[in-house]
Image (cartoon, rainbow, N blue to C red):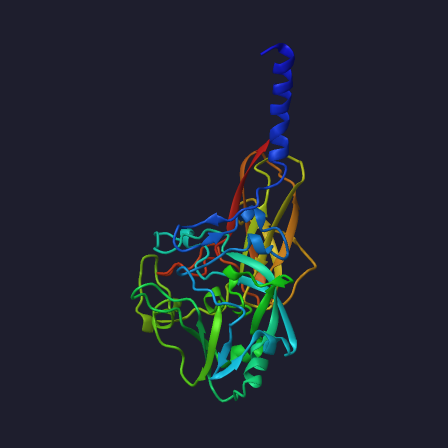
Length: 366
C-alpha cells in the first residue's frame, strides 16, 4: 500500500465511528429464545410516547394471533366485529404499561422468571373504545362484580391458560379496549386486533388478543389468578415466601423513577444534563429529586409539561458536580398522593413491582 492509499484509508477509518455512533442504536434486548420477551434499553426511553418499535414485548408463550378479518369479540354471547366497535364513541388514554416483573433481576436473592432489569415499561397513547360502552352495546348490565377476559393465545401442553379477571368497578371506570397504539394500528405483538388497557395497573391485567369477555359475580379462577401475580399482605424479609391465601392480586403500580440520560464522565464545575422519567399508579407525579451525596440532600428536577392521568412524567436536572471522583446519582419520585419512592424495594417471591431508588455513576475529573 502506497502512502497516499494508506492516508486515505486511515482518514476513512477515523471518520467511520463518528457516523456509526452518532445516535444510540434502536433495538430491543431479547430476554430469551422462547417465547418472545424483549425489553427497551433504558437509554432509549427518552420520549414522552415510546415508539411502537421500541416498546417492550411480553409473551408467556408463542401466541396464536387471531385473523383480523374473521375476528369477533364475544361479550356474554353477543358477537361484535371491529366495525361494530368502531361505531362506538372513540376513547383515548395516554398511560404507562409496565410488566409486573420489571426489575426482577435487581432483587436479591435471585428469583426465577424473565430477568427484566429496567426496560419492561413504556408510555403510549392507546386508542379504542371504553369497556363500559362495549358492555352497554352488548346489553350487559351493571350488576356483576367482575369482568372475565380471554385471549386467543393457547398455552403449550399442560400449561394453564392465561385467563384473568378485573373488578367491574375498575373496568367501568377508565378501562379501554384499544385497537390503535400511538396513532397507528395496534401491532400484532402488542395484542392486535384488540387489547385491554388498564390505566395505573400492572401489565398482567392488560389482556392481549382479546376474543371473549364475560361478566360474573366471582373473580376468575386458575393459576394466573390464584397463584401468580399476587402480592404479600404483610411482606417479610428477603427470601420469605407466602401461600396464595396470604397474598392479594397485584393491581396499582408503585411510584418509581429512572435516570435515562447522564454522562459517564464530566468535569468539576461543568453543568451536566440529567434526564429520566417517573410514574405511579396514582394519577400523577408531584416531584422528582436527585441526590449526589447518598441521599443526604436532594435537588428538585424540572418536570416536563406533558402529562396525563397515569402517564409518565419526563424530568431533567442541570447538575453541577462540586467534587472530583466517582459520584453516584440517585433519583426518587413522589406521586400526587404523597407516596415516596423507597430506597429499597420490597422483596417478594415473584419479584414484582421493583421500585428502589435508581442510581448511575459519573466519573468527575478536575
